[in-house]
Image (cartoon, rainbow, N blue to C red):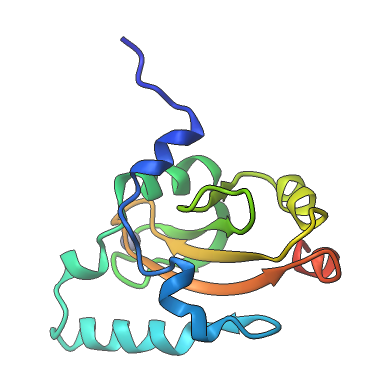
Length: 151
Ligand SMILES: [Zn+2]
């Protein structure tokens, strides 16, 4: 029997650190960058204070999204260095699932930006090879900023 492949399967994503509630204080105007936090995690990993399984813990569904709909980058995975990381985007907001919608095309993001209400976009860096993952950035998607944000 074929496995169900509907987007609804993302509902099985366990609560992850990029849920809006966990970074509510960071929801300011404009774009927030998480490079400092990323560097800090990687530094701790290289010093042996964090185990590989703790930084390479992407949920299987997130790894699947990375393989199937991730935006390619030219950035080597900082952990395994065997693959380039990809970016997976989730949008949270009115009438979207509580666990967010995984964005598969730029057009989809632009369409959501035109809806009434405020939407937050969370971009996660994922290594499809070793499952390293880290929040790359978040930004507010709104009709006013939709064009700029969807670039
Ligand atoms: Zn990797």
